[in-house]
Structures are given as structure tokens and as C-alpha cells.
Amino acid sequence: MNVKSAKSKVISLVHVIISIAIMVVAMISARIISNLISEALSLNVIVDDLIYSMIYIFSALIIGLTYAKYILHLSAEDIGVKKCFPRMKWIVVGILLPVIVSVFYLIFAEGVMSKNSIYSIEGEIAAIISGVWVTGISAGIVEEFIFRGLIMHISENAWNRKVAIIVPSLIFGAAHLNNISEGRIADAILLVVAGSMVGVMFSLIAYQSGSIWASAIVHALWNIVIIGGILQITSTDAGMNVNSIYYYKLDGSNILLTGGIYGIEVAVPAIIGYLLMSAAILLQEKVK
Image (cartoon, rainbow, N blue to C red; front, side, top):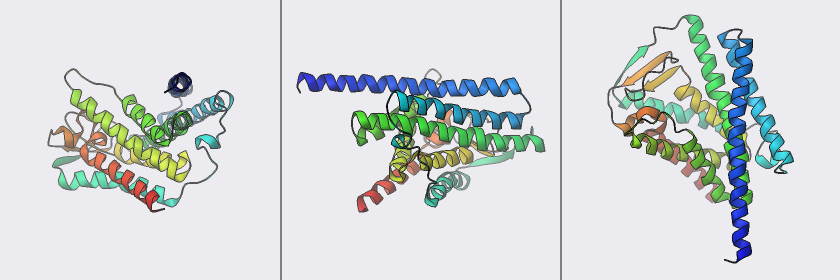
């Protein structure tokens, strides 16, 4: 490798790292702005959640698109923000994947189904709206815009598509690390593995569909079904989600089945789902 080539690779790496840091800060800033505005208005739980979600989405898009246009010199279309509605198959995938994982647990994993007694009818409506808008739609759109829109395309421009699939996926997995208690390295490993696998799946969906909207829909629907506050499949390690109307408490404590403190999203059944979906996309691309 000559000096010029080595220098170019170092510059590309520094450029990508700086851009990634800025994008993460943009996502955090959008969240802070949304929280401040919704808390300042403080009308009621349902309206506050709707306001938070809309401001979170629009502020993240505005910050990210402005950075892409004036700093990276990339158009919205260049980073997958296209004026198109995803094909129906991605909605079907988005529904089937979390439903199949949930049904697996309900049929094959021993546990007890209960209804959360703390909720009134109004509380249940608020929990559903929060699950759909805050946990599902806003998180799905913003995270896909940042990771599969900006970071993935920045990485592709600096290196190649294979690297662009891997880099944001690893960052996506690592970005969800929190609440790691001493001695629970297994939880962290499982989270990074599962987070990276689902990140690869989202990346492949974005590439095959040609936009971030398909991966955003699959991401949002996964969140709504799995952690949206309607039905929570949980364990002693993961704790009880007080925002869930119904919960299915698993009897076992096998971390591969329960996912440890991070729940079934990072457990083996979910990871198998991510891998099978990714393999199906790759196979379809190969057939083409």
C-alpha cells in the first residue's frame, strides 16, 4: 500500500467517525428537543406522546437532512429518503416476524399470562398510543434514518456496500448497551450480537427496497408488537414492564431463551428470525 492510499483511508475513517458522532448527537438532540417541548406543553399523556413523536421525527429529519445537504453534499434521495411508499410485502414481513416470534413463546415456552391491574380504560388507550407512536413509529423512522440512511450511505461512499451494511449494524447493536450490571457480560454479548444481526437485516431491507421507509416500517412494527406495551413477554431478569397491558412471564431463566435483562428481542428465537429474514433477502438478490 502506498503512502497516498494509506492517507486516503485514514481520512475516510476519520470522516466517517466524525459523521457518525454528529448523527448520534443529532438523534439525542432531537430527543431532548421533543421532550422539552412536550413537557412544556404538558396537556395530557396521549397528546404529549403524539406531540413528542411528531417533533422527534421532524427535528431528526431536519437536522440530518441539513447536515447531509450542506456538509456531506448528499441529497435526500442519496441517503434513501425517497418519495415512495414501500411495497406491501414489507408491511407483511413487519407484522409476521414479531408475531411468529411471540407465538413461539406463547406456545412452546412455559409461562403465566396476566393482565396488568394498574390500568384504567384511559390508561390502556394511552399505553397503546404510546406503544404505536413513541416506541413504534417515531423510534422506527428516526433510527432507520440515522443508521440506514445517513451512517450506511456515508460508510458506502467511504468504502463499499459490504462495509456499509456491517458498520451501522455494529454501531446499532452497541448503541443499545445500557443497564449492564456487574458480572452480566453475557447480557452485553447477547445484545451486541442480536443488535448487529437485526441491524444487518434492516440494512438489507433498505438496500433491496431502495429507501429507508421499508426498514422503518419493519422496525416500527417489530417495536409495536414486541415492546409496544400491549403484550410484553418478559422474565425475572428483564423485569416487569409497567407500560404493558398484558404480560406473559416466562418460567425459565435460560438467558438464550429469555434474553436476560434485555428481553426476548435479543434471545435466540429472535436472532434466528433476523438471520432467516436476512438469508431470504440475500437469496432473492442472488436469484435476480
